[in-house]
Amino acid sequence: MNKDYMLTSESVTEGHPDKLCDQISDAIVDHFLQQDPFSKIIAECAVSTAIVFIAAMFDSKASVDFASVARKVIHEIGYNKKAFNDKTCSIITSLKELPYDRTRNFDEKTITGEEMDKIPVKNNATLFGFACTQTPSLMPLPIWLAHRMARKLTEVRSNKILPYLAPDGKVQVGIEFKDRTPVRVHSIIVQACQDTPEEPSMEKLRDDVYRTVIEPVFETEELKLDSNSRIFINPDGPFIVGGPALHSGLTGRKKAIDTYGGYSRNSDAALSGKGPLRIDRVGAYAARYAAKNVVAAGLAQECEVQISYSLGLTRPVSIQADTYGTGTVPDNEITALIKRYFDFRLPAILKTFNLRYLPTIMKDGFYRKISAYGHFGRTDIQLPWEKTDLAETLRQ
Image 1 (cartoon, rainbow, N blue to C red):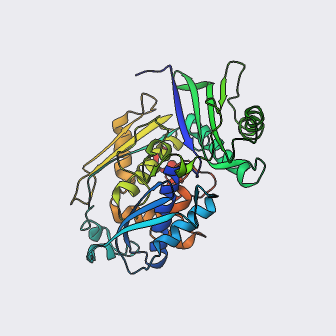
Image 2 (image 1 turned 60 degrees about the vertical axis):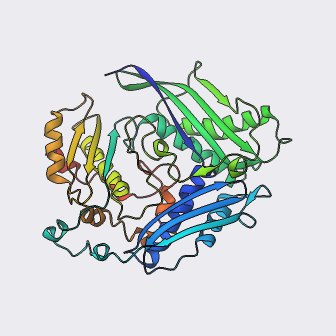
Image 3 (image 1 turned 180 degrees about the vertical axis):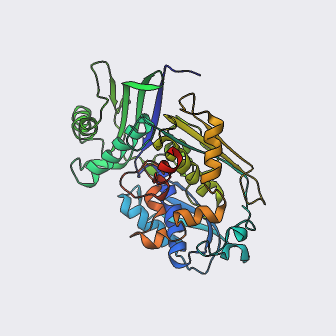
């Protein structure tokens, strides 16, 4: 096991084409669940120059205008130029209404544990949850910093602090580790997209981004930039317009950004675009919940929880914890605690996190809000799987 290494994590703004697709897909999920919490829905999206393609399968009482949902997301993100905008882009849909599935109509709020054992998962999945002590949110530092800067890049554009920026952008953060502890910021790369090639100059853009994006983020970070930290802002020159007019996008293509930035493993399955009946989405939230409570309890400085499900079975076929040698008790004991205190059956996960009803409870939906800037470690949204309410039980 390497203890000294460097790791680079990437985040992108909500205007990146892949993230645009994630947000359209999750906005569709929100609209279905707001009308019918028992909806079964899978939605995927692809974008390219002036074209949005949406494919969806659903079993629901809801009625959703897919094109209107997509146009609203595009407008709110800020795509309003001739090359790509909500009014003139072509939207193509391929929709399939699934046959009625009576098994989706169970009420997780009232069914018994015995009844939960009769509700199997409908797909195979191996999922990973992770937590560590590197940041207050118990997330790895590289992805934590990358998300903060990507969000800041969007903020200075939306608030017209840097009005010449376009919605697309990305950030990479490289962190050096000694004995698995972050010790210095090795490098930062910011790719900021501008509306026109004429304004501003590269010198002004680089000065502006450093002053309004990079500096404010590190003002509140314990680990500071040093004289040897390498900082690159648009190192390849002007990045003009960006978005779907420049490169295509697809739902679910940014799995490392959605999870732990490559510091820990993540499953092969995408998270966005799937309703809460899909175990390959909600199981990842349950795995994070378990890992975070283990770390919050002081049982380890790092913890990865792996859960595997098999089609047609109710409970996971395997659960495993790995603390990378940082545990205060053996990993097999931590695994036993997880199996004892966390219920990974699908109805139990829905009940614990209230996943069917969050789009109605939260203003303007729920799933779209987490489709950009990560599904874990968020401090701007109260996510039920980020609670550490079982930490004291595990500690005792």
